Length: 329
Image (cartoon, rainbow, N blue to C red):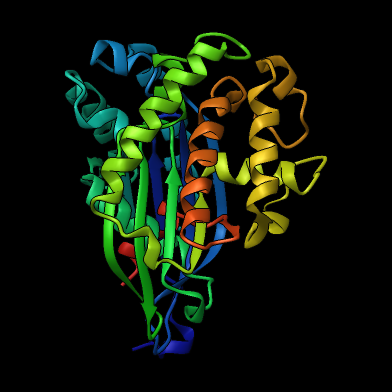
């Protein structure tokens, strides 16, 4: 029998298919007394807009399924090439209630199954999404800075998760998934670029109602640190830092005072999609919807400020890391 030092490293892969993007993490599993951790081998991200029209039609657009198929086929090859022995793919807001979701899940089984026997996407609840997001988002934070309010601002939903770290293990005290996100808000009310004042007013009313409902479950006042994860927050941080191009190392665990966050959000809201695309750190596929994300971020900043929090911490690690960790044990 080979000893542990000569054993082949265990490689796992996680895929997060959201409303706007699909992302891949392939990582080596590292073990310690505090449990498994991950060493990144590769990360990939593509904008596929799986949620295109879902809010209005209740169905996933066939073109969106095709875009997902193309990206997922590449991801399966990449993960297999790195030696991954296990893969987990989760699909979030866009697929939860779609009438034709079986078409999507059958496609994922066909594509993933070509390299990973029996693998297919799974739709997860808002509660599970929150748990995975928290596990990924707080992994590099100091437990003494908790309790944490982790916010995953996605394309179709926004998760609020309150919790801490106990001996390195995540502890969730409360979680809520709000049915708002940058794509959903844009398709529902933000039809102009930049949006008209009436559109902004309507979006703010939708956001305020969602936050009020969330606060009935999540006691934001208990949080000491506000953590933002996913593409809207990382892009906002890149702009706040004045980066000429996206730099994940500089963004990870960077901090921004809430006043500066408001300024960045307001600036983005006043731009056209073309003007946003011209910004160095902006992914072209995010430019037309980040105004909706900025409105959600600004509203949550007001909530954080009322709770006595003065700044936002942005983490590059999120639900994708949580997905990979969930199969690392």
